[in-house]
Image (cartoon, rainbow, N blue to C red; front, side):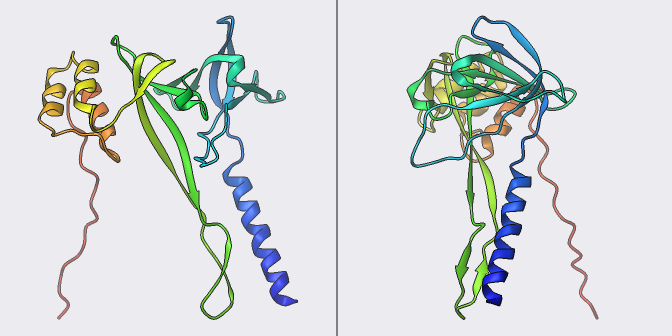
Length: 226
């Protein structure tokens, strides 16, 4: 009986933690409806969880003001939306009708200054957060963790996009970033490639004209005790 009560307590704590983790957070923003009318207020959207079962469509939540009731808006009801992350960052998302991203048709606009545009496709993945039997037979709690997944797409508009891969990376990005010869040179020399975290360096170099600083390293005291 005690074990059952303990399991119930642990599950209740887990569900509470998940509810807090996935509670809706609103940022200043706006959306454009199908008539291209801008509606300013507060926007809530989170990248959907990656699923083998697919799905079709996504939605945002909108409040004209903080104390107003939330309004659910599906991708079929809007053309685009903006989210203000901080004083200098304004994320722009457009709705894509491309079947390849039908599961989550909101594409973030990354670069929009050339004939070929660059978009990012955001998803989340998660694992853990459940119970399993340990070697001794006792029930153990597996920690919950989640992480983001970003794929990149390119095209002349959000409906006609193709996935950016390691195979087409150099050719496509050289065209998109043709106005920055140093960046293009680094791409063609394979100093900059597509990979986990590497795209951030490419975009930073393109926007700022220099490479990002290396991540800080911990100062380890290597003094040998007498």
